[in-house]
Length: 498
Image (cartoon, one colour):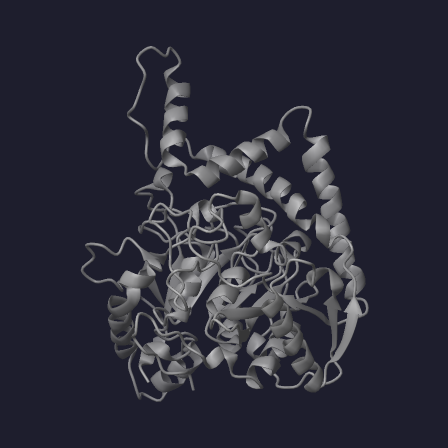
């Protein structure tokens, strides 16, 4: 087996035993990227680079005892890296090089990780569910190159699935880690809101965004979260709570754990194979000793409209800073007949720099916040958001975790929904509620359809109880083999993980 196909914990053991070096790992990863990246396009700004795996920072004290000891980490294009392009896959931020590292990047470097200079593709400003809204073009699904990878962290998920990365960091505002993880057959975790610092994450919706890991298995997700979690005074939403060793929660035992199955997540319109595979996974958890109960989350039906009011309103506010004045591109197309040059510059810069989906969401959010509509839309949406959160609080008084499908469908064809925004928005119907409630959620592979497309199982738990997620997910993973499957890309075979 090639080194790039191994998990981070497998590689760490081999590096510690001096069976391989971190340079051996990088060489294997480089070869794989050169082999399949032209088909997948999980990374951006590769063209013209001499060393496609340049390291952001190599100075680590105590490298021999560091937790990640040279493990390569791939980063989404909206997480700041000092001195290296971070553009949110948008023309308006072309050439932007942050003067600082995001807190999660600094933590990775301090842990000895090899943070890759090249970034993962994403939907522009994280606005999308398919990674088609990128100024660099779409990323293709390793399981079927004619299908999407999900979004907005699609480049991260595709890189992991195609073994072009060992571990990755994405961001999740309404499912942007979990949905692409489901579509690509990998593991994706959205931590509790406030558990991981958002400092250095270019904001989409500040009350919803969270950074989290995308990995090949549950153990790697626990390993990565242990490193990036924790209080950060630079982030006012960061919560000052002790960070447990999440790897200690990797227990292959769920006897007597109470699992809730909400009826609202098995609605009419869900893909029949997704429903059946998810129910089989729930039955497997029952066989492993869990107690399964039917529950209700009655306000689930309002999650999508509430999300697209709150998220777009916050996006409208956050994106107001991108105006061509301080950073990014500035339009040179000025109309000499216009007296107000600054307004003209704003209009032309944003018109040229923002893509269609960004413009759509900014317009929707600005409308929701406008005079006369604030109480009717934004304020009312916040009240319903509270009701959604209370649904989960009541549920967790009787069950330890909740299990659902991650997405109502498997990966769809590229271009299939790009002209139908509402249909695209519904792709996140099962993931949005976790962000609105601020609770942690994980997606892991639980089966494949007749066409060989992966299906994701979502597990949700009470806030700051990521240990429960890891325990249930790890037990399921250890007693199934779905996470061991690998895609064949354009006739290039891949061995199963072992």
